[in-house]
Length: 274
Image (cartoon, one colour):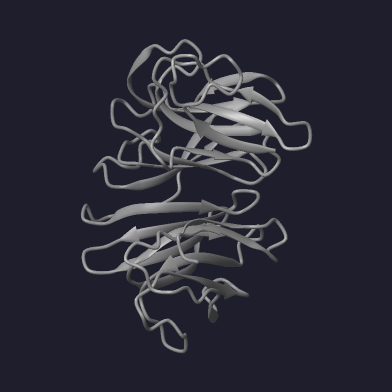
């Protein structure tokens, strides 16, 4: 099955040409329109799905069913098996906008970047990651960013949501940090520059990222965006770095939407490179 955003009238239900979520069954060619709004406009990083496409988390400034204008962007969860639509952030985030929901592979946890304080641990309103447990409807603050100048740019979750990866932009460098949310332990801290597009393996023991920087022992020297893989065996232990692609240099290659397969043997990505 394929989940996509489109303004097209793929089912006869989107005659006003608004941006809507659609689910396509690639075996039967059946298309299902999931939202019906008068202005569903999520940001490019505004939706995520579990591996079985049974739950979808997305961000919108409209009610996904009534289309009514909301006071803020909220996070919603749509359960395709139960047919339920649940508002995750209504009230909990005041009027500060939550950002990029990321759903764990098993569909039970959502990671959200926000400067709000839904759980009482972010009174200084720094950029933090909050984990929302769908079964218990509870928020937990997973990160402890103390500097107002440090911003969390991207997040990724393992299959169960136990391991959390964050891309943090500090004053003059970037950091990839992986946390074990069960123990609170930092599994990995890797610093550098020009990081983007995190994708964490199902077991939380390796991570993919995109960078145009040069790293010792790697072939990337022309400034092109490449995909790298960081792997480790134990928290805080030694890690290995491997360059997976060797793309031609382009002015705007836009390597993005990097994703692991469930077994970690395949990756998918989007690029303008030939």
